[in-house]
Image (cartoon, rainbow, N blue to C red; front, side, top):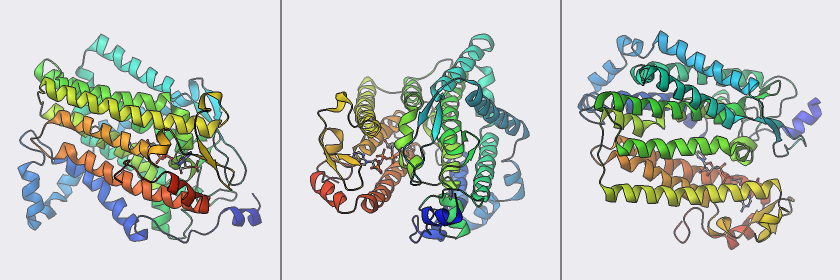
Amino acid sequence: MSSKKQHLYNPKTTEYEFLGPIGAFLMITTLPSLMYLLHLGCQPEGCPSSALVNQLSNPQNFVQFFSIENIHSLFDLQASIAYVGYLSYLVLAWYLIPGRWVEGTQLRDGRKLKYKENGFRSMLLTLSIIGCTILFKGHEPLLFIYDHFIGLMTCSIIVSFSIAIYVYLVSFQKGKLLALGGNSGNIIYDFMIGRELNPRIGSFDIKYFIELRPGITGWTIINIAMAAKQYHDLGYVTIGMILVMIFQGWYCIDSVYNEPAVLTTMDITTDGFGWMLSFGNITWLSFLYPLQARYLALKPNHLSWLEIAIIISLQTIGYTIFRGANNEKNAFRNNPDDPKLKDLKYITTESGSKLIVSSWWGKARHINYLGDWIMSWAWCLPCGFNDIFPYFYVVYFAVLLIHRELRDEEKCKKKYKKDWDRYCNLVKYKIIPGIY
Ligand code: NDP
């Protein structure tokens, strides 16, 4: 890209999100600490444990929490070797497993990038390896993950920060297409939000790979390991744990099965790749999302048939909305003239894009978020009501989705201008039909 063109395609970012540099700094420093807090502070006697409550309520003890010995105990050489081995395996699987090359949406410089679609096969290979391990060696090898959980998480934090630093630095090379929201010139903000839109090493797209591989696969493996731990302690796996494994495992497998659907999401089309997506997808997803499975490994909970029925119903309703809406939009974005979509009503905008105004997308502007949030309840309820930590996920996820909806709304307002107002008049609700 010539420097004139580069200037044209990479305008300066003039508006901040996430409270700007201060918000970015707070996210970078507090979110990793929050992960340690949620995991180290969850013990068989309580989540939060009385030790954590004591530490947080007494400033002297709180400082002790950050003592050299405590920090040292977060590092684990064996876990680091295992984690780096795991990541190398995933990269190798991406290279070696055959897959279709699919086109992404058009970039603002007119290009369309190609992405290798082999996430589902990579997941199947991983699950087969775990299956064979259990078959031939029993569940014991999986206990390594439970025993070295904190060390694995620490290594993953280091990896996600390292990748974020790398992509930030290479984004200054000539010819890079930057994210419209990541070129403010403020180091902390741009590092956090992501500067370059599609950092690549050859045909290896870092954002696309990280979006659906290390985190989603890691989450699945950790859940299985937590069930192995429960089996080790009890001699059986509780129904609550089985439900969490099936629901979350389904979510993970479904997302890699529908891998091309990620190409029309905000993460891929709009956001730059920086610390937020690196940490979010590598560490937060792998180590925070198995919170319920880890809780149930520590504190098994027994469910009544009524509770089981309610939980399964919530999951079914949530999934139907979530997958139905996402597939509908994805199919429409890929080929609006597909005969299968002939009954969909839409409006045509000046930008050339069409917006669906019927079916799922006629009910609320982000009906897919509602489905996702309903599912999050089905994932937490198997933990019962003795402790609050497992419910961190529903609260955090509601905040994430509401904030994400506001961000997407901003983006669409800018893109579609008065057409967006016309669309909002036709589809009045943001997430919950009739309510919000
Ligand atoms: P969406 O998949 O909803 O994508 C939003 C984009 O879709 C808009 O920017 C617009 O892009 C397009 N769009 C909006 N309205 C319409 C319409 N009526 N017709 C056609 N296109 C429309 O958002 P996300 O990328 O945020 O989320 C994708 C999924 O991922 C969701 O189900 C969400 O719940 C899930 N998710 C899960 C997370 C987790 O941690 N588990 C985190 C974040 C998301 P354009 O018009 O430019 O094409």
